[in-house]
Amino acid sequence: MSTITAKSSEKNLFGLYRRSRLRTAGRSRKVEQVETPTPETGMVGCETLIARVGERFGEEVAAFFRMHLPTDSTDVSLLENVEREAVDSLPQERRALAVLERANNSRRINKYFRAVNSRLELGGIFLGCAEVNGQRRDRFFRNHSAPVAHVAYFFDFLVHRICPKIPYIKPAYFALTGGRNRPVARSEALGRLISCGFEVVEYREIGGLMYFAVRKVRDSEDVPNPTYGPFCSLRRVGIGGEVFTVYKFRTMHPYSEFLQEYLYDKHNLQDGGKFLNDFRITPWGRWMRRLWLDELPMLLNLFKGELKLVGVRPLSRQYYGLYPDELKQLRNRHMPGLVPPFYVDLPKSFDDIVASEVKYLRAYEKAPFRTDIKYLVIALWNIFVKRARSA
Image (cartoon, rainbow, N blue to C red; front, side, top):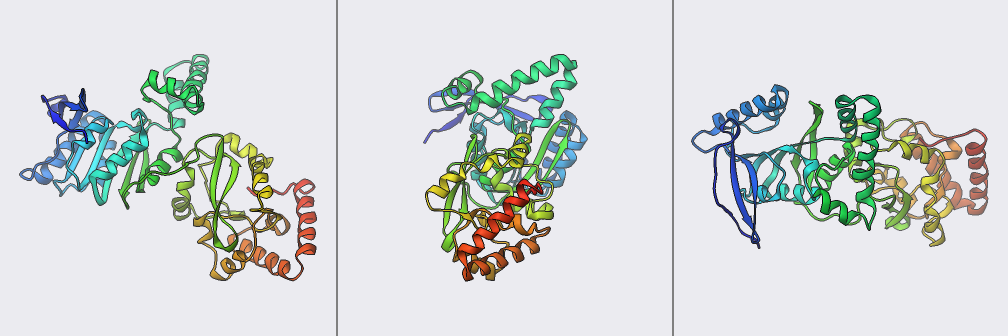
């Protein structure tokens, strides 16, 4: 285990920050750390720190911090930057931790979030910020004329959003940039936080950044195979209630799968059983979904015998959990399919979807072959002639 020792310290901006040269594993680097309230100062110390944050970042940011920080506690720390050494130097079991630098500048965002998680008590609050894609684009057009902004944003997109996803270019990208200033989507930032053991309390746009308040609900652990590249492997409930992997082209921002429960709690479902105001879907993802291109890799599941041609949709565990027990038991007896009964009945609400699937599965149990042929013909007619869509 690497040890961290403070070599020097000095007052910085507004007397708020302590600059420490930390030595880790034989190398040293400077880390900005905000002082924490002492037992003697208690609430006054925390309020003083928040007030000085307001002097630097504005009263709206200070109000957001004040709303979520436990100002009656001395177990609160504020850090200026996203260096993991600063987090690792903190005592464990903090009630709250706030970071002032954008999460985009962390070389390994998930490792940084997991380090923060390890320093918080269960139920502890983490406050931070990130520049999300829309805000990044707005910054280019705010700081440059339109022609220059279009060119600059194109190259920024190419370098910072395409290069990190190309296997042979990714190492060079991180070597040259240090992983700093990477763009993230709103859903990616929130999804990464949830995957690292937090639940979202609130997020708000302030001054061109997304500030977030999240609560630790479990210890963090590595997440295998998050959806990051053009292909994604999604865990879905199949026959017998067993979970299997479905292959698709990714139409959502990375880590979006971790937001399902949050979206249901905040936005509920719209007509057709989809999440209302689903900001996880990318612009090209909507286009791919309209043409069903995203589901082409599911043919591999068909060839592997994990799906049949006609059948109920394979569902995520979160969405599956919304179904009544009677339908769960009915579903568990049958293999899911590529073409769902949705395209036959075109249900408008979640209850309509449940009724549609119950009707199909009961008909299938009585006459499997005839039911699937009937549903396939009607579904194809609705899709290609009536232009039915699932979203």
